[in-house]
Length: 247
Image (cartoon, rainbow, N blue to C red; front, top):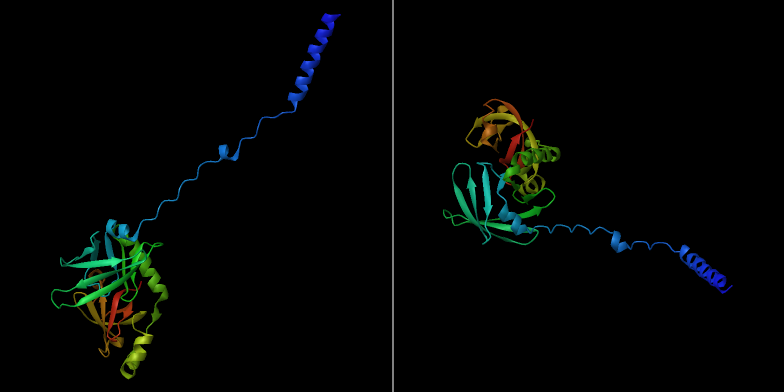
């Protein structure tokens, strides 16, 4: 009897343990255990490190007398080298958004400043006042094509007869309306130099404009040709700078 009672008690205890443990489920993994660590965002390079680590080349600068390359050093100095073999040293300084290049000519004792802003979206250095754009040398051809397209889309058609009349009658108004802006102009080539050509409407050599272009494009035209060029007018009303042929 005692043996039977003992067995029954043991069975009852086992059943109660099963009943208590049957409702338990394995613990859910915590969020910390399942989350994948986020990849940290790369620290953007400073303007100084970008300047120093990149070889820069000028696109459609003020005259395009030759192709120019710019090199910046960490001590605030730098050098500009032209494709025709000449060069010039400069000093530079700036912050994270813009910087200034200072050229001092040993021949004229003139100091020239260029104020560049850095466009991180396009990786360009832009001096809006002088229409100078520097791009990485290793991406020069792609940038040249893109920049020409951008300029072509915003260039207005130039009525030079009207613009010249305004220049003669009111130079201040001419500067406000025309100077430093890009225009598309169709005219006749009167003569061709090493880095420019003279052009006039109807080939009459009246109120002609000196058009500064690259030597590679000048080599494709001849006197008497009617061509369309795109460039920006200077404040003196006689030069179209940084010009290129409109396709």
